[in-house]
Length: 256
Image 1 (cartoon, one colour):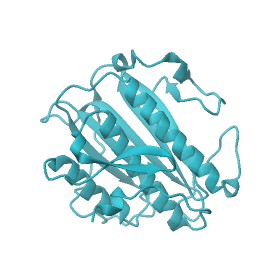
Image 2 (cartoon, helix red, strand yellow):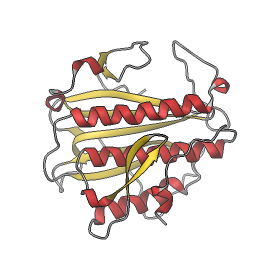
Image 3 (tube, helix red, strand yellow):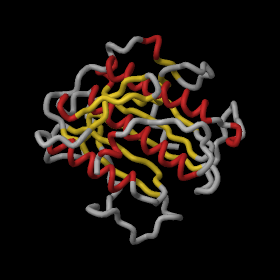
C-alpha cells in the first residue's frame, strides 16, 4: 500500500537500532523526492498530499489515478526502497527532455547513503570529525528539517524546467554485500553508461543528515543558467565550516 509512503516523518526519541535508522532515512528520502518533484513541477498538484515533518509542512507524492507517473514512482519506491533489505549505495533521479534519449540529462538529484557501523564500513573523515555514537536524535531531526528547508529554498529559486520532461530513477547497491544475482522486482540490470549533460552543469551539495547508523547526502546537478535567480548569499564556493550554509558549489562533480 502507498499509505506507508504517505505517512509523516516521525522522529523517535532515540534511534537505537539500525532498522529504526534505515526506516527514518527511507522516509526522509521519500519526502525529499516528493518535495523536489513537487517544486520542479514534474507531477500535477493532484499527485500530492500534505504531511508534516515536525512543524514543517511538506508535500508527499501519492498514487493518483489521473497521474500514472506518480503512481508508478510511489509503487516503485515502496517495492525497491521501503521494503528492500539490501544495502543501497545511492539513488539518482534524472530529468531529461527527449523521451528517446534518456542519456542526455538536464537535471539530476543524487541521494547517497553511507553506513557507519553494522553495515559496510565507510570512512567519515571530515575536518570536524565526530564520533558517530555521539549523534543524537535531536541532531538527526535538526539536520533533516534543515535539509528539507534547503531543498525548498533551492527549488524555489531555480529557473523552471522545460514543459515536458521525463524522469528516470536509478538505484545503486553495494556490491560486496548485495548478492550478484539480486535484481529488485521489475528491474533490469542497470549499466553505468556515460550520461551526457545538456548545457553547462553546476554541482551543488545541498546537505547531509546523520543518524547513529547512517548518513544521507543530497547533491543536485543543474544547468548553470537556471542558477541565475539563486540568491548568491545561499551559495558558498568550496569547503566552508558555516553550519547553516545552504549550498556548497563544487567546481566539478565530487563523486567521491
